[in-house]
Amino acid sequence: MPELPEVESLRRILAQTAVGRTIVSVRIGERRLRRRVTPNFAGVIAGRRIVKLSRRAKYLIVELDGDHVLLVHLGMSGSLTHRYDGFDADDFDPRHDHIEFSLDDGSRLVYNDPRRFGMVRLVERAALASTAELKGLGPEPLSRAFNADYLAAKARGRTAAIKNLIMDQRIVAGIGNIYASEILFRAGVRPMRRAGRVTRGEIEKIAAAVPVILRAAIGSNGTTFRSYRDSRGQPGRFAARLRVYGRDGKPCYTCSTPIKNVVVGQRASFYCPKCQR
Image (tube, rainbow, N blue to C red; front, side):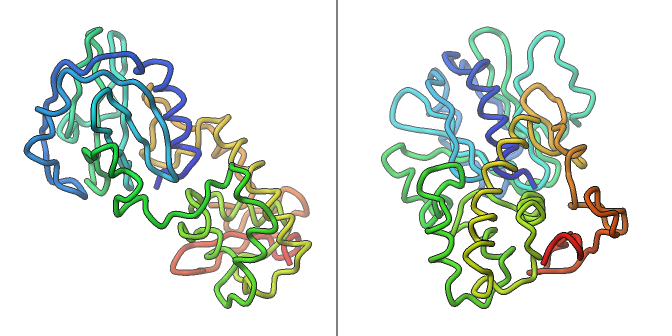
């Protein structure tokens, strides 16, 4: 599932290519996404200009002139690509091109989602913060609101695994399974440790690792294992820099100890038994 780095990478590219463009028309091929596309969707959006691209957690926010925004979540297999002359769409099955926005320069924004777990939701701007998807989210991990003091306060007395804590969207928004594993490896903390028993020094290492890992992933346009593509149709490159995630049984790059895979919170969790305590 695309996490914060993938969505932030997508936002940055589309901010350069799509902002300022006017949506001339909308074609809806399939309304049955995670949230059903509303009947007024195309009528409200047609003729609106894209004025800004922003992000909250794993959600892309397409801000339009007028009273509405588009709230986009890529789900497990979704993509939002900006297609123009010369765009290579060979990796995208046209049967899954569920929503297509035709822009005033002849290009198209296309939402493709084979598994239909994602969504493109029309939201009134004034109601955005109170939507079910966004309300209750914790601070952004790249913001000043997220730091060691904050994380230590949230971890105090918790019996939940530290990996589950930093993946809890109510605690910190946008961190998912891939980057939680990488963050904890960099911090030297095992994913199954009880959050309340992680020392203050370890909490500081985790808080410091969060922006390092996330910014590095954003710089590589995220991680692609199967279906994720950015708006240009290109895969993320961070998979080549993963230290533990998906490397079960392979030698640790630091100490050569085989990487282990355990289930934490019903998710595969990778760690080095020597480098992480």
